Length: 168
Image (cartoon, rainbow, N blue to C red; front, side, top):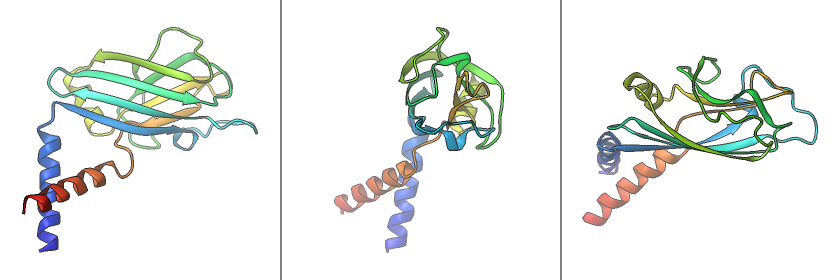
């Protein structure tokens, strides 16, 4: 019975995500994901968080990228989405996050843009990443793959199971 409930919960989760118009991704942005490995001097701890949404009907992409502790301001080539690429693989720029440079070493970048159908599908497949570039690390200082945060899908599945249990 327990395995049947888990299977039904997983199917409910898939149906809920498949029918959604807006998909939200919350993910870490950090040094560990960067390729090649950046130079980070002692006393710096660059990191960040990305919150990205994509409307699967209108293809409107929105973002809020919060970051702190960079080795210096964000400079050319800037901050942008790259793709399509899996974790640990580099790819070309797909969309600039900001055109105003430099950006401070700690801050938030927000914006939106309409993407095409192929770009939307790549984002939904987890094949885009955010990259922030500094003078010390021109190829990129911190990177974050646009995927759900660890445990997010498990939490949604658990919510589905709890909902099923309450209906009984």
